[in-house]
Image 1 (tube, one colour):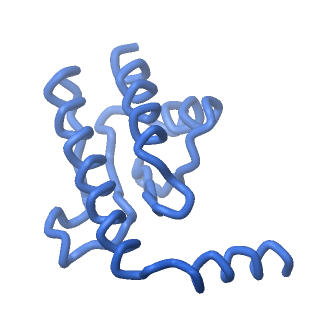
Image 2 (cartoon, rainbow, N blue to C red):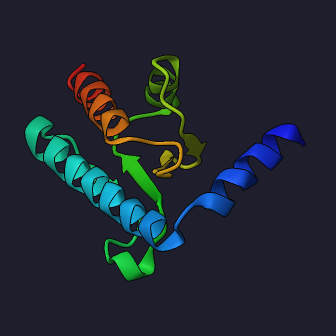
Length: 117
């Protein structure tokens, strides 16, 4: 419960309007990054999450077409925290209290590396 309490304390101090704005901005960066990677690598990347900000939260669900669980496992082995859902969907959450733009840049580099293998 101590970890839960610490997390709740952070949320109690957070400005929720600023949190939501940063969440949307970071998710926009992630969506743009996925589009760029698809164009750069020629790999089909299907974003399942609505692109309109009013229709989404901070989670982005993506299908990396032609990639299986080994692709996801490789990302996890490199320190990416995400979630795997069948059939072939990777769910990534960009939570501003825990994620940074630096994390997104690192994710982009890892995805670019793994998609060109």
